[in-house]
Length: 290
Image (cartoon, rainbow, N blue to C red; front, side):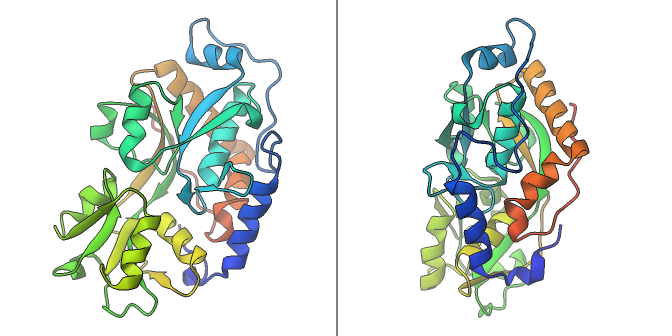
């Protein structure tokens, strides 16, 4: 995965893409969305059958992350994660109008799934062994890497996490990024959302914001000329689709949907209509059939 033009992209490009997606009728498929299945049949008692019979699904996603999950002008979120949710819903016979979107921040993703508040979480959600103890994951459907966001011009000459000694860094509480950066510094300001880290970065309260490079790319592009990504990823972050623990049938169904989307170009169309406004099109990762 390469960042287009060193992340020096006009904010107009991403804003236009998000507005066009957000202004569409939430009940109508976007150009990237697969057609809604009209004749579906699933095993009795399965999660797929329950959702298809209800004609609705509740999906948790981020509301503040450009490119992946950002609240649009229509009041519904837009982005690559959102398109993945629409794709899965369509294969269940559920149109976009049948999706209820719930805001999922990093700290509430597992509780939302465990408590049955959502059916899925698609929210830049890194798969790891600790989370697998509480929830199951389909995918991955994308692979990112943790990086650093600094002020434009990089006045502190930060080239990687090793340069953060004696400097404060902001990230999100309960995220994989918080755990990873703690290996380099304990001087961490933890917020509830990444967008809330931008104020402390502007004011100099922190020297950097850290999370996955694609999230930072979206924040930098949305605030053109203010920030830049160091562009030196120091982790691998496979994004998965969170669902109820040990729901093997549903996980297998979603993995089948993802693999079909890789093969028929739907995944690429979803990427290029959202994150592809700023980022080059990557090769989709192989799903994990654990």
